[in-house]
Image 1 (tube, rainbow, N blue to C red):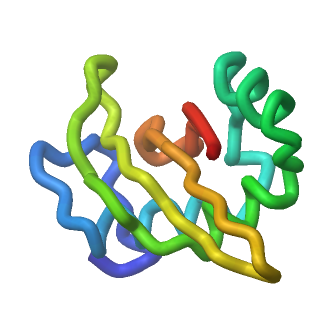
Image 2 (tube, one colour):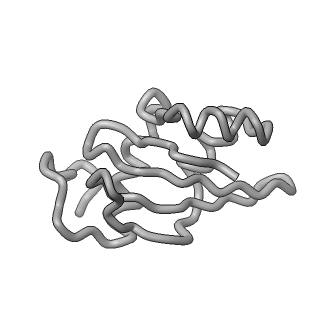
Length: 105
């Protein structure tokens, strides 16, 4: 899958590399990174900034997934270590439109 060839329909199977390409393509525009209410609550509780979440989604390394979650979205964990800080974001792909940040720790 090339970066510009993201299918309009969510695929039945998704490799880690292809999932990462879709995430990177969508996350290039930070407006496509959406924190769901639970994610917002957890980031505030842990004093994680929006910018830290954005950079984790844009540049993080996959540690788990992708797998289909209970809502039918492809979900994976992204890990980023920068400037002495470690951050993991649990994200789901709302196919071809946005990245949902479910949790961050």
